Length: 277
Length: 296
Picture (cartoon, rainbow over the protein chains, first blue to last red):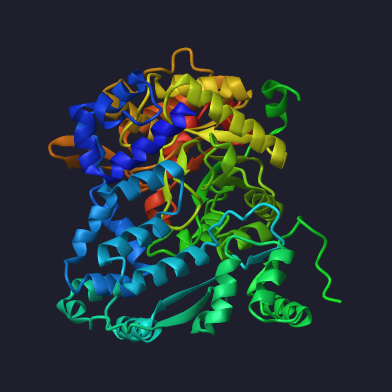
């Protein structure tokens, strides 16, 4: 296990010159939380430090790939900061934790960017959801669940106007004659309109499928889908729909419809398929 | 399970071949493998197909196979030392691709092909940590993949600009081969670059190395660059082969009693500039058992 931990530290050092400097200054302190021996730490500093800089474009290449998945968030970010400041991601605790845990670099970048935009800004959260569903990142279902959200689906409440703003900025970015990166580097990206959200909220469903997209839905539907994000038993779902005022046959019909539309799924291997008869 | 010594006898002699990756032969000035096969059959004994299962096989590879060309499967997406990387989905896709190209064996760099999950943006290639513990984990992965696929699995020494650990690269792979009872693909260019980066003589570590386990050898070009005054070498698959790579090829070809295949990794260079490299390979292997077996 120690060798694989060491390998992950090497990846972090290749992306983050500040970690290289810290390890060379005092490896025991810089890596005190990592499960590697002092001998293994010494291997890291036995190398000429210039070798860590053999690929000077590693960060920029990785960032290029990441912003492709967050075009709107990146354009919003550019309103107030130069694009190259996004390279700070590779020195962030989010990035380092991501490499150690094996999570998705892009999804974690989305979370970091969301914080950089200010957590109140909705596009970071929206694009991070899209990014996570594109990868169908596992959510960790509650044991015993009978129903769950389709892995390609998510749903949430956002400030009013989020979808319209997202569509507008995305259209502007997509219409740019240059590549996304050139657009973001150019001065015009700094002129992206600010988000003017209302105090009300809007309920959105994110569907990362061939025919899907981001669309609005009723708050009740989004509440149900959110409830199923981490799974629920059949009895619990029926109980909640009953509390919301539905008769049992109406609730069963709704579940059947949502399953037919591919929004929710029966958790395989937990129960025999639920009969709607 | 029979021993490597017995298993290797059943492996075909493939001769001199070329490598490819998805779309490589459609890049500007790329090697035309059809023309190579037609005009230089002696240098196109097989196609080493670099495979990322997410990309699959390109039209050139499928055409090569359709015309009866022999292949080896070079994986580009498995961390052999990580049991979690052997997902059933990945294995199924490997088997499906192998079914299409019927490779003589599977091989590939025994290093870190990706960090975290296998997805866009996570791909890279780093050498393994050169320790005995790491060699054991790598060997376990080779045994696992051999069992799952039914093919021989030959690890390759990866390229790199930095190497971490307390073992010489060749000692590391000697352990891997011993623990997994397997052979290896020795990349002479990668080895030459490693020896240079460590300040060793090109032949350091070959004394006592189990040459009889070398099944395949790679040759490729390299380029020089500097980082703040430190001279470094990049394995770039041009035809500018380092002098010590040629020396290593000669040594390996004459000592590797079970050598079955030599690849010139020149897939992104036009045929006329590749031919002298192929000729030099023929010259280096001249007089060996391998050359006699493949009638070169």
